[in-house]
Length: 431
Image (tube, rainbow, N blue to C red; front, side, top):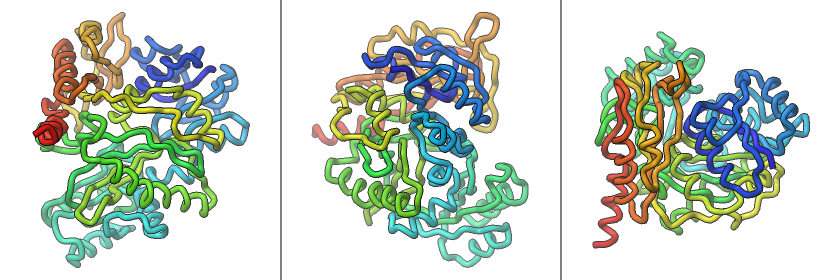
C-alpha cells in the first residue's frame, strides 16, 4: 500500500512516521514535507494551495490513499476534487470542513442539531459586536472569535470591556486576520478543564482514536497569548469510559447525523475541543483534521493497522476494534522560535537533533524546519515537537524534557510544565 501525506508540519511528520510502521505500507510519500519527514518518507514538491496539483501528484504516484494534514487544504475543496476523480482521500468535503473553517457555521450548526456549546452571537460588523458587548448579555470574561482560519490566533478571552473592544478593532477594523475577521463570534466564557477528543469518521460511523490535553498559552501555568499549541499529553486522565460514551452520544453522533441530514457526510478525522463544565461536556471548537501537537502524542499510542483503517474510513466502511491504544503515557513538548507567537526568527541552525532522538523512548517530530547549506535550521514559529513515552506520565515527562535538553538554537523557547497536570492527576489516583 502506498500512502501520500499532504502537509509540512509536526502533525504530518507524526502521520508519516506512524504509517511507515505499518507492515502493509510499502511506501509513504509526503508533499511538500520537511527534513524530518524526509527521514521516513519520500518527499515531493507540490503547491498545497492548488487542489488540481495535489490530485495530479496522487495520480502520478498511483497512491492507494491520500491523507490530508492541514485544514487549509480541506477548505480549498481538495477532498471534493479527489472524490470526483475516484481517488481515495481521508478528509472532509469543503462544506463539511466549515465545522472548523467557519466559527459562525459551526456555532449555527450546533444550535440546529442540539450539540452542547456556549451561548453565542454572530456579528457582521464592528458596530454589531460593540452593541452585543454593551448589552451585557455575556458579561466578563467573554470570548471573541474571528470567524475564519487564523492560525490559532483569532481567539481572545477578554477580561474587561476595553480588552474586548480592542479585539473587535483588531479583527473587524484593522483586519489583522484578513477575511477571517469579516464575521466575529462572541460567546460566553465556559468554566472547567479542557480536553481534546478524537474520532475517525466514515460519514456514518465514528471510531474513537484517543484523548489528549493541549496547552495553548505560550508560557508556563497557562499564561501569555494563545498559540497554535505549546505541547500536549495523552491520554487525558479526565476522560473516563463513561464520559467518553457521553461525548460520543451527545456530541459526535449528533454531528455525524446532522452532517448526513444536511447532505454532507463527514469523512475524516474529527477533533472536538471540549470544556468539561458542571453541566457536562460542551464544545469549544471543532477541528476537521488531526490536532497539532495532539497528533504527535496520540498517533504513537495507536496499535494496529492504521493505513488500512484510514482507507476503510475514506471508502465509507470503517469498523471499530482495529486500532487499540497503548497502555503507555505520552508527553509532547513544542520547541518554538524566538518571538513566537507574535513573530518567528527563521534560519537559526539547530544542534542536537540526533542526540535528542537517541534518548530512549523519545521521538522528535519536525514542524518548522528546512535544510540550508547542509544544516537543518528553523523555518517557522513552532519548530519541533519532542515526545516522551513512559509507563507513567512522570516518566514520559522526564523523557521528553531530557530530549529537549539535547537541542539548542538561538532564541529557542518552550514551556517547562507540559505534563504537570497529568502527573498531579496520576498522583491523586494513587493516593
